[in-house]
Amino acid sequence: MATTPASGSVDGAGRKQIVTSLATAAIAMRDVAVARGGRQIWSGATLEIPRGSFTALIGPNGSGKSTLASLVLGQLQPSNGSLSVLGEVPHRGNPAIGLVPQNHALDKASAVQCRDVVALGLAGTRWGMGLRGKQVGLAVDAALEAVDGMTFGKRRFGEVSGGQQQRVSIAQALITSPEMLVLDEPLAGLDLLGQVEIVELVHHINHDRGVTVVFITHDLNPLLAHIDSVLYIHNGTPQFGTTDEVVDSDVLTELYGTPVQVTRTADGCVFTRAE
Ligand SMILES: Nc1ncnc2c1ncn2[C@@H]1O[C@H](COP(=O)(O)OP(=O)(O)OP(=O)(O)O)[C@@H](O)[C@H]1O
Ligand SMILES: [Mg+2]
Image 1 (tube, rainbow, N blue to C red):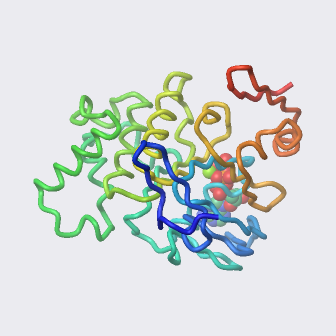
Image 2: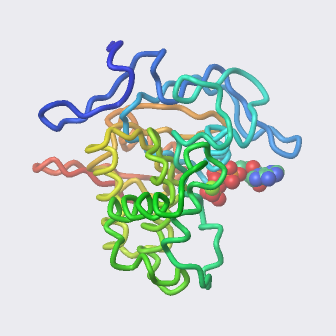
Image 3: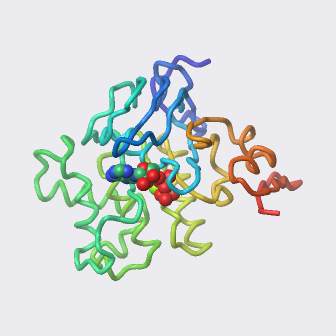
């Protein structure tokens, strides 16, 4: 088990490094449970997500995926157990964690410019305090460049495509140069090409910058070429495994509650399909 370096990083050859030391896990849970409105959502979570990893988070509707994201962001407290995120107790407004929320909170008919949506990522974080207008503009440029979004930065958020809106959301999450990115169903509503483009973009953020990624999704297929691990919520308990362990016909059939076939082709492609 590696003990150094202290975070996900990219080595001299451009390969990403995944750090698995307990002390340096991106997310470490010990017997964590969470409740909402007086009802337990899930419990018994004991797991470590390594820094630098690209993890898919799956589970049925209502199983508590977004709830797990809220815990990691410090928006909710565990009802049991201990939780550490990037070596700290989670707290709100942590610039080291970027969130791409489920169903972007902004009205889809919003007249706000995409650039201004990106700048909103600075609100409520220490990172944004004291930045002057010009510096904010430069930070927005850098975030939009990172998502290949400079061409539509000045267009109204409500008028760009769903895929471009997701890029804006990702740029908003990237503006504080986070160490970890949590994306809550960013593929929802996108066509196949749009899904591939977002997955490739997130892959590069993970691979090139060493950003730890937790990617909530209902469909693993678009992610299979890039994820190294899967966090799944099953029977009220989040569990973590490598992609090889979880992407298995028996495991996925049990998880989804319907027959799932995992196929590995000669050239290394893996895909799943319902029988
Ligand atoms: N603010 C809240 N107050 C009370 N209960 C809530 C709240 N938000 C969510 N819940 C409940 O917590 C449970 C888990 O919800 P959550 O949104 O985390 O599920 P999810 O796995 O993200 O689902 P989906 O796939 O539909 O996005 C659900 O039963 C939901 O009704
Ligand atoms: Mg959700």
